[in-house]
Image 1 (tube, rainbow, N blue to C red):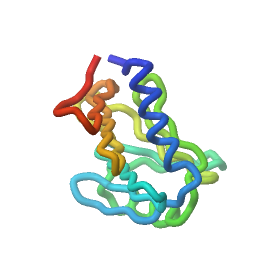
Image 2: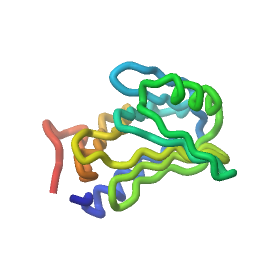
Image 3: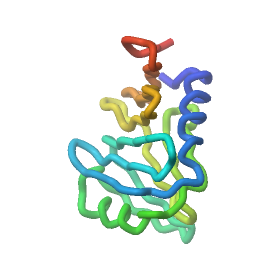
Length: 143
């Protein structure tokens, strides 16, 4: 089920906060966590399969905790985010100059999530729907 447009808008506003900031670090565990050098703490966690698409048309596909993904992310360290957005189907795209990091929605698992230091959490649910946890809520706000 595609996410509600207001959820996509909220996710895009949250993602917009990292535009212009560099990839400071990444950590691998149950997924890969990306940390940015922004003033407000934003963390993007990817648990679904992903791909790197370069401006020259080359693509690399991988699982979030693989050597290939680590090699691609090392190349992006300190690179500024030039765009970040979720489309109406729940696919996340983060652009670093000439490279797009693309995380499609997953039919069975949570593919990605982004959180802010203010307590806002957006999670890509199975099938591409988005669940929103607002700082003052106890659970997801799903429509």
